[in-house]
Image 1: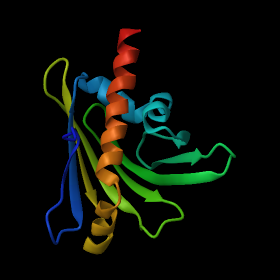
Image 2: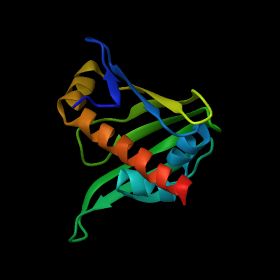
Image 3: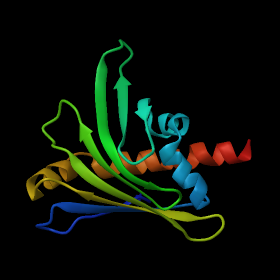
Image 4: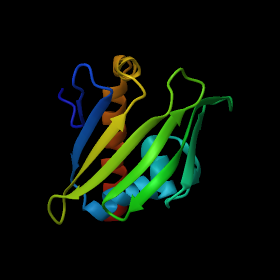
Length: 157
């Protein structure tokens, strides 16, 4: 089965591009990245903080059924332009991966469709390649599938 979320990574570069088209208006796609309740639903993680403003920050955390934290990520938000882009850092705690830089762009394709492009820059080609060896593409595709499903249900209700 072909993944709807596409990952483009050129050999020898420390960046990747993630693209996905959604059957959602651009304002709802943007809201899926900026509304803590919606983020929790499609990412399957708890949003501890989400300050969508210049110099804002965020923190996500996932625990197992015993209450042990199994994932924590955080970062600083450098720029937010409504329905257009979010520029931020992203760091997964307790992993060997250093901070990465994300440029997230939202594009209106029609009144009912939109596209996201995420340009991620890693500290080195090696760290980028290590990330790509993980089930990264499948994970982000699954998360984007949930985003489409969660926001589509919200529109219908």
